[in-house]
Image (cartoon, rainbow, N blue to C red):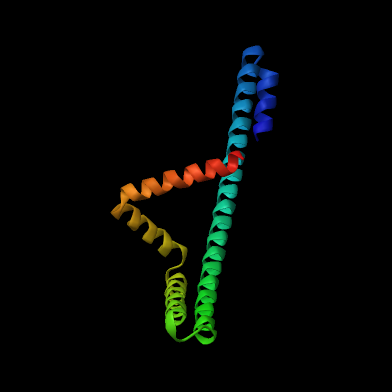
Amino acid sequence: MATQQRDKNFSGSGSSGSGSSIAESAKETAGRAGEAVKDAASGMGQKASDAGSYIAHKAEDATSAVGGGMKSLADTIRDKGPHEGMLGNCSSAVARTLESSGRELQEHGLSGIADDLTATVRRHPIPAVLIGVGLGVLLARVLTK
């Protein structure tokens, strides 16, 4: 239908009519191209969102697996480590710490770690800034050598 309208404008309108029909055709083409770009961008955005969700899910799974490994290591230390004396106390303390950290990882995952870290920084802002500056200095020294 648009083609027939253009043909009529070209044959019957003279020079001023053909100029307006070309402008209308250009606007229509630009509008279609804009819609195509919007559709492509929307599709790419959805794919990026899906990929991010997949990566986050895999990271949570890996964190849970690490937590299980830490609990298993704690059991191994308890079984094979010394049970008496100073070394026995040390090995049982390490085993308790590994087990509680592993349980925390399994139950709360990366989001729990991020929440805990945020709360700690809010409770102790000055030491957190000093630690950040210290790590920055160390990183700069390592990278400049």
